[in-house]
Each structure stands twice: as structure tokens, then as C-alpha cells.
Image (cartoon, rainbow, N blue to C red; front, side, top):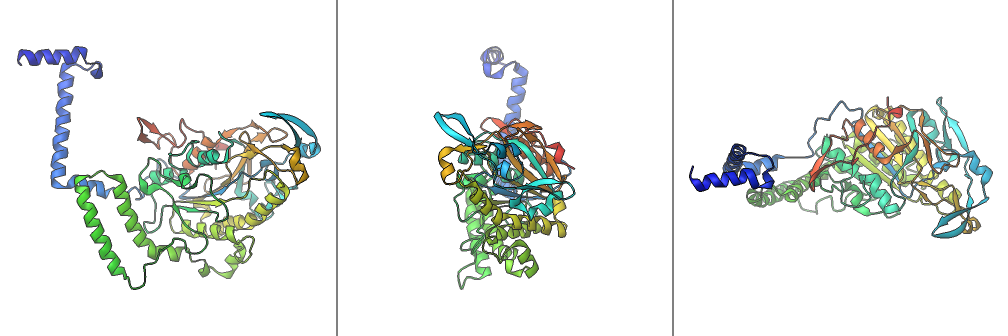
Length: 484
């Protein structure tokens, strides 16, 4: 080694802070390994194998879970607007005693507020005696299949940020949704249908929109696919008149040839790869989607059970029946949105309407899954973005009192695969304002959902922006009391 080279190596060993404690020999060894890797990459690139390997990656292919799963699929019924815990599954007799009595609470300035008793009556259902309000008389017949988590809380009480948090585990947009994380971890069993399907409420806007089912920094193929529950599930799904299947195949093949030429130069372009696979999936969906969502093929008995022929229950009935048909065909994650729960006033009338719209279809979904042997492999989740207060402003008492936002106490229920039905977990205080015993957070709900699907929330990570990220951030604890 010449003198200059020796001095250079010594300087690297002694003075370069980027190498830390790495010595001269270690530096040369690692440098050589790096050159070898670059050479191998160059050879693979020259042979076209690197681009081929990138194209062969498919995040939707079925993957092995971290451990044996209880559930193969999940249906998440999102009650947008936030149902009131003390008017649904968490009775508070003390509130009825205090109804109309004034309290002072500071919201920027002092204002007159009054306690609001529940306008609904509660009844025990099933052998387990789970208490539900009279909003859910049909659902009460499924009480022994349901586990109610009363002492839940979350991290925001603004609709949009709380909806983000329930769906993505953070309050700001840009992170993957729980459905996307599930698809990233498991893939899907049906390559002719979207792995993650979203069924919106056509009457109301979803807080935050598509961000709630986005892939974030995960592969683009893991994002949710929005299907219309009324009319055509996907606009322009069918080809124009005169365009044959053979012609479509040729067009798609030609488009892929152009895209593959670009991939030979830019082999790791994730957006282009996702676009190519989406084109291919869209082609396959032309045959699969119409059959999967053909509700007219269902027997009249099933249609009546869901309430498809009833104007009030029909919107939710369609979504619940579509969800059953989708998971039956191997779709991994289905999210149903039902809006209208934001009852700041007239909670008696507004929550009653929501109960009339959802009670029968939700009960039918659980019973239908059960009679088909699908409930044992399908996780069903119900809940909103936060809970509601025990009081309301005095002004609303003139038109009918309601309840405001409350992140400190909310209720969720789960049913199906791995769930101990007929269970009630957690307690809130006597007015339902704060959690008191067996308290769980939204991160714990996410950890439980992933765990039932066979995924460890601490191992399901993705390296982004300098660190490994998770749905549960620093981790969640599973709700053991509701698990079989």
C-alpha cells in the first residue's frame, strides 16, 4: 500500500464520525461487499431479471399469518357520527334521575347545560342477559353471539380526525387504514375481486373521504375499493357495445408491453406496478363483480330477512347482504358506512331512525353468516368514531335534547370468529362520561382485530420515513376478556 493510501485509511479509521467504531479492515470489507452488491445488481438489471422480479411481486397474493388465525375475513360496520353509548348498549339509570337538572360546564365560556336521560328503555337479551336498548330488538336475538366493550376511549372528539383515528390509528391523514394493513399482512383469497371493499352511505358524506380507506405508504394495491351499494357497483364496469373480451385482452396486453418497457428502465416504480395490476384486476372484475353482487339471485326468504323489500331498512340491508356475499367469495375486508348518528339535538327521534334502519339488517347479517357456517371465520365489528356526553345545552331542550361529542367513553361490539359471545367488558362511571374499569383504547381494538386475523400488531410493520411504522403505533393490548 502506498503512503497516501495508508494515510487515507488511517484517517477513515480515526476521524470519520459516520463510521463510528468501524476499523480499517472492517471498512475495506464492507466496501467490498457493497461493490459486489452493485455488480450483482448490474448483472441482474442487464439480463432484465431485476425488472421481472419486481413485476412478479403481488401484495394481494395470500400470505402466511404470524400465527393461526381465528378469522379469515372482517366486516367492519362503521356508524359514522358516533352513536351514544348510554342510549344503545350502556344503560345509565342515574341519568334518568337527573334528566333536565342544570349543571355548569366550561366550553370557552360558561353556558347553561342540563343532564339528558335516555329516551330509550333497556332489556336483557339471550341466555347471557346482555342489555340493549329498544332500538335493537332484532339484534337482541343475537345477544349470545355479541361481545360488548363498554369502556372504550379514543384520542379525538372532532369527527374528521376521530374518523381518521378509528380507521388509521392516527389523527392526521396519510397513514394506511386498518383494511390496508390487513391486506398487506394477509393478501386475499380471490384475485378476481378487490381485497378490501368499502360500501358507503349514499345519503351522507364520509368525514375525510377516501383517506379513510387509503393505502398511505403501503403498496398501492392494498387500498380499499369503493363500491356503490345502489345502482351499478362500479361505474363503467361493463365494456361498451361491440367491444369483445378478446379485444380487451389484446388492448391490455399491448398496454402492458408499453409499461414493461418503462419498467425495464425503472424496475422499482410502485405506482406503475399498482396501475398495471389494477388494469388487470378491473378486467377480471367485469365477470366477477356482477355475479358477486347480484342480490336478485337471493331467495325471497333471505331478502325478507335482511329487509330488502322495506324502504326504511333497504339501504343498510343491501350493504349487509353485499358484505356477506363478498366474504363468502374470499374478500378479506369489507367496511360498511352508516351515517346520521351525530345527534346534537333530538336524540330520541334521530337515534330511533338509525335503529329502525340498521337493527334488522345487522341481525340478519349475523344470522345469515351463522347459518352458512361463515360466522366462525368472519369477524364482525360495530362502532363509531367516539362516544357522546351525558348532558346538552339548555337551548336544545326546546327542540329535543341531544348529546355532544365525548372521546373519553364510547361503546363497541364484536361478533364472530374468536369472539366470546354474550360477554360485556368494562364499565363507565354512573353517568357514562368516563371509563372506569377494564379500560381499552382504539389501539387495543386494532390489536384485537389484527390478532383475530392472525397478525401480531407489533410485528406487522412497514419501514417509512426513517422508522418502522405500525397500525397501533407503540402497540396495543388485545381485549382478552372477549376472546375465546
